[in-house]
Image 1 (cartoon, rainbow, N blue to C red):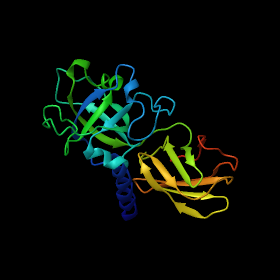
Image 2: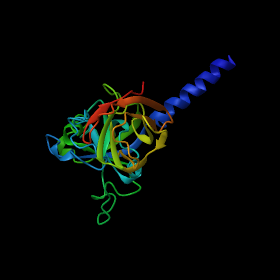
Image 3: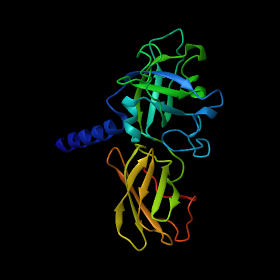
Image 4: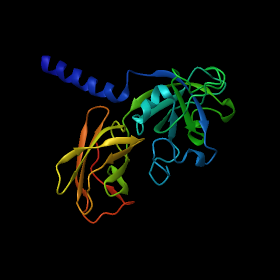
Length: 246
């Protein structure tokens, strides 16, 4: 029985690390237009959200949630609550792909929706309309962290130039938000990368002509290793797929 109890404690601890502590109250608005074209790019560095596989199920996070970019890639289940005039039934799952900046010229309850310490989601317009009517503008919601479900492996897009390797990491499953990355060339040992901005990770080592491996660690402490997922003949601007969190 003690062993079963220990297993349950460990399991619940693992779940809470991704899901958070149950449902949390927040608010949601929308941006980007009916085709979500205005949500492309953004502070996470993902660029075209369609080609990256995120689609329109995306959100810009307020300062309180964005964590200076470390929350990029995390997934949230959101439902509209306590507003029967505007709320629609059901819930959505979105990926954090952008930052909703504060507007200190406006008060927190009159336009400064993303001001600290407010927890706020600025959703793409199409996904907002799955939980609330368009005319609502802003609605109360509850949210919780959930695991990210992705197709295929983690993707590594290598930008920059020699001695400045800037790797954009996308399509991350599990917790979704990358907190540490290490890189290994076929002629080097493992080296920690530094986060440049969003989910762009930097190495200043000369790695041209080497096959590359990556260790990716997410906020829940889980790590996945993609061995030699980038062949020796890679070029800047190319994208390669590695292993995935399960």
